[in-house]
Amino acid sequence: MDWLKSQFRSENTINSNGNIWQKIKKHPLRRAFFIFFAAFIFLGMVFFTKANNFFSVINKNIGKDDLAAIFPIDEKVDLYKNNDRTNFLILGVRGEGDSEHGGLLTDTIIVASVDSKKKQAALISLPRDIYLRIPSTQKKEKINAAYLIGEEKLPGGGGLELSKRAVEYVAGLFIDHVISVDFEAFKEIMDEFGGVDIYLEKEFSENKQWGTNFYIPAGQQHLDGETALYYTRSRFSSNDFDRARRQQQVLMAIKDKATQLGFLTNPFKINSMLEILKNRVKTDITIFDIIKYSRLMQEIEDNDIKYKVFSTEDGTLIQTYIDGAYVLLPASGNFGEIREISKNIFN
Image (cartoon, rainbow, N blue to C red; front, side, top):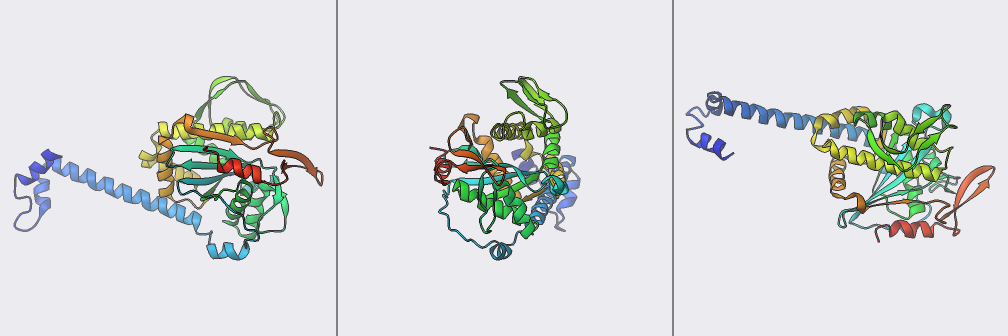
C-alpha cells in the first residue's frame, strides 16, 4: 500500500484538466487495482442489497400492530432478560405444502442462547408434546400446535409470534428472535454445505417410520441432506427426547461446517443459501444479525456450549393422556422448574 501511495505522489496525479483517469490508464497496475476495487465495492453493494431485500420480504408480514390486535397479551409472565444474552427460537416444520400431514406443526423447538460476555452458548430443547393453554388464545394444545394456530390467525408471521409466546411461557426466557425452516430447506442447506460429519457412539436404526430400514453405523459418519433429515426426524425406534438430542448434535455439526467453509466470508455461498431459503423460511432476524452472531459463535469453543433436553428422564416432565392423546405436563404442577433451569443454564 505504501508503494502504491508513492506511485501516486511521484507525479501530478491530477492534470490541469482535473482528469485522474488519464494518469491511471497509463499504469496497468494502477488500472488493475482500481478495476478490482470498484468491482469489489459493486459486488458487495449488490450482495447486501439483495440480502437485505430478501430479509425485508420475510419480515414484511410481521406487523406489530397486527400482532397486538390479533394476539392480545392475556397473561403477564415475568420473563428473564439479560442484556449480554440473546435467545433465538429455532423451529422446524414440515412445510406449508404438507398440510395433510401436519405441515405447520413444529417438530423441532430449540432455544439457542448466546452469552456474548461469557462467550458461551446453550441449546435448550422443548419437547413438542408439552401441553398448555396457548397464550393469547383459549385453546389447550400441545406446544407444537402454536405455530399452526398462529398462521391460521395471521398468515406469514402469526406462527412465529404465537410460538414465541408459547416458548416464553414455558421456558420463562425473553425470546429476541425467531426463525422457522421447513424440512426441504434444511435438506438443501445440508447439501449446499456438502453434508456434515457426526460421531455416533452406537449404531442408529429406524425400521418403523420410513417404510424401510434406515441405518447408520457407529463411529465417525458423513451425512448428506436426506440422511441428516431422516436422522433428526426419526423417533419411533426411540423417543422424542433422543430425537431432540440428535437435532442438537446436527445443529452443532452445521455450525462447525459453516465455520470450516468460511461461510460468512464467501458472498457467493451466502447468495446460494439465500436462493435456497427463499419462501421456505420465516424470521424476524436481519442479515446483519446473522453475520454478527454467526461470527460470535465461531469464537465460542465446543466445551463452552451447553445442552439441555427437558424430558421425563430428568424429572421435569411427566407423561399422561388427555382425550386419548399423549401429552407431557410439568412434574411440579407448573413450569417454574423449567424456567429456573433455563434462566441459569450458564451458571
